[in-house]
Image (tube, rainbow, N blue to C red; front, side):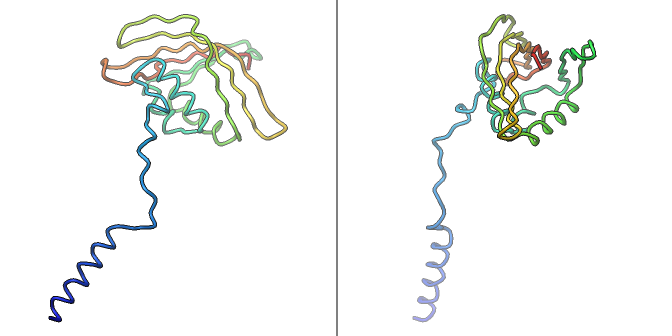
Length: 167
């Protein structure tokens, strides 16, 4: 009888420790589609927006190609500036860490053309950069993206991004 009682006690302990009554249930109602699915052009830009607004360098990094090139016009110096993926990731991480809030609003698509594996998109954007409560920068402009993917089943990644903003 003592062996049977000990067995049931251990079985009861094993069953109750495998189930934590205080642990919250996993919420499966939030899907990645709510944060943008880069398998479509619209989903790509939605994911890009969320990467900026959540200041998520992991998500942002998944949206740019290994051979990515960012470029912009430095109006002060009167020159075009460009850098690759590594510099862009450092710059973007610095931006994400150095601000309180980023609010990105994608505007109209001004031009778009391409194929199932390469697509050019020019669209307007508005970006509010909140450094602190009294220091908010507003940037308007156009972004010219070249998106690429290996096959139709792969997500889009930016090969190039040319920033044509007022900043």
